[in-house]
Picture 1: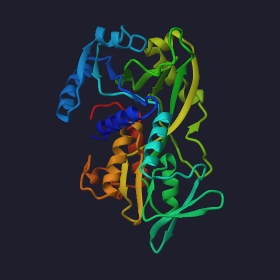
Picture 2: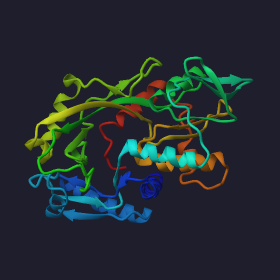
Picture 3: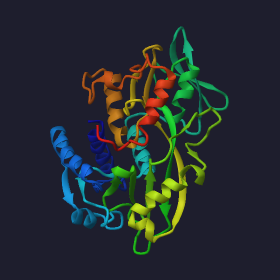
Picture 4: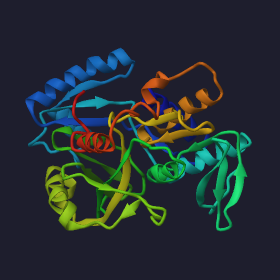
Length: 342
């Protein structure tokens, strides 16, 4: 439900924005094994129960949908989900900011959060900027991404998430492509833990098929991007590129190493901190679920009684009895199996 609500949110923002921020181009999950093709048929039934349209394409249909990204020799078929799509993260963020400002919200730009402020056993605000100015609030929502655990730990709260590094590479510009951001489905190869899509004049590709590389953020870390090292990612990226026709035909260009968060059950952390009144979390959420997470959190803060997901399933304290080691190992164990059937 979080993903479904996110799509609706991004569509609404896209319609209201000066330029689109979301393109509903669909998604192909390419089956390269009989077992995956069987899973695709099961996923159609599962989606139907959730109100999500999906269908299985034969190999020819999959290739025709995205010939630059689907290998005709490998594909046995594909699960097609037409409601899926892609966002422009920067444009989406600007659209969200504009909508929030229209609703009366204010923003303090270029003001790094230094610490959570506590008084008499509760959070009462945040310290920001070079002069550590105090901004008081009845409730503080920590939505700091990979830096969430750093700020939470300073306040004595453990966030059960692990930050992990992830490679993403682009082709150089491809002849015949224009600046249109995306007009073909996003393509995933679940059997190989690879995904790929168009980005204007280039194609991009990411892979989970490498040893997980956790990262422990510190206050000194100022970017969620780290250096790309061939020793860490080179072999995995080469194997992934061999799957995708576009990457066999065009040289690689820009290579990125981004950092994102994983939890032991692959669900975000949304809701109040049980051990510290006044502190709330919206952490470990990817763009797939971000719109739904925002709505879930808003409904909880406003006490509307309406929830997209039962609050206990996303409660930040649901792993309170787990050891740090168990949280770490379980979360990292999901990395290479990110597309495994559940």
